[in-house]
Length: 198
Length: 334
Image 1 (cartoon, chains in turn cyan, purple):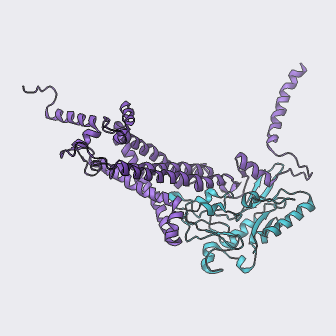
Image 2 (cartoon, helix red, strand yellow):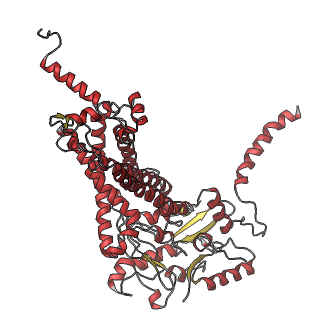
Image 3 (spheres, helix red, strand yellow):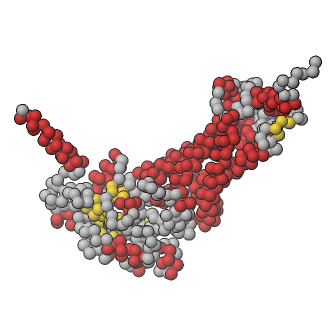
């Protein structure tokens, strides 16, 4: 089985936010939640880079480690998913996540956040694959159809890569060698405790 | 002269140059885009604190944080520190009490019950005490469930039953907080005047409060131990309540995830310590001491119990009662 990962080549990202929009549309994500977002660092200064970020599907995921109800699980493809039927909306995963991936449909006064929502790597949830129930709770399940996450698939500059970690790392390494520069794999150190050496 | 003219320019130049030190040096690759390195930035923020953040077009300040390594620190706190502190405090207190009960046994009234009683707590004081007590038990159990339930209850109940209990527990935790806080405020107003620490409390602690040593140290309406319980409840409960309200009204004002992590750390550490303290309070107020429960039960305590534990208070009450029977100025009949 593959070890699925995301890799954003920040030297290619043009901050078009199409990944954000595509994700919202594909999964009909509720108002106020952005499973994916584009952050621009050093905006308007030398060293400006835009990075598309979502759940990184960490090795030893912090969300899973702190969840009071153990609602997280890791699939055979190393995708970190959660069960909204056992999520109690406590907010702990949000405190622990380094990437700000877990979000809640409501502001949450009196603790009424609702069930946590995050990027599923377009892999749905614990419900039967590609059913209406799964779609309402988690959005579409492209992985079960043999497709990769939509955000990466439709990226106009192919900055956002999704797929087996080894394969996308190779693609990135070749790019860096050809063009002579690269700011590295954002979040990889934090999520996978590894780095792509070029 | 020339130097004097140049000096202000030099200062200006330095001031202009200073911010650029904070940024990254120009790229050695010559791409002209400046050098940023993901690995370096993540490592540096992890070691030196701070977060990788920037700008987003989403109107949500939270989304501007790209990477917050503090999540790891919070995770370690929650999974390791809190589990140990809570486990040792609560488990340790239960062990101490079992040992105490096994060696010392139930503390009896030395002179035996007098049969006569004296009024200790009125209905308002008792009602308020039990409001705080019952809310605290709900808050304590549902709170402990969030930290330990996963290891203790989840394997027994299974995921769905446990999730249901935890969900209702969370709702109860959030709403029972209100009567708890109200009770803390009322408690402060009712009892603060009798709970100001004084020299007698030091004596009381030196004599082991009559628990460990022999003999009963003299005490007023509240003895050193009770004053300690009072201040733990009022101050601890106050801080726990404040940090708790901060957590159930997330993101008001300019606060973000870092403030919530801090609020949670304060809330949970104080809470487990309070749970440990209250287990001792419950023990001594019920099983541990003969006659103690009546104070909060019927409100009428045995006179001998009162004399042993609150001698000064009994004297005051007696004096007050005599005042009613024979007001000052009235000469006793001789």
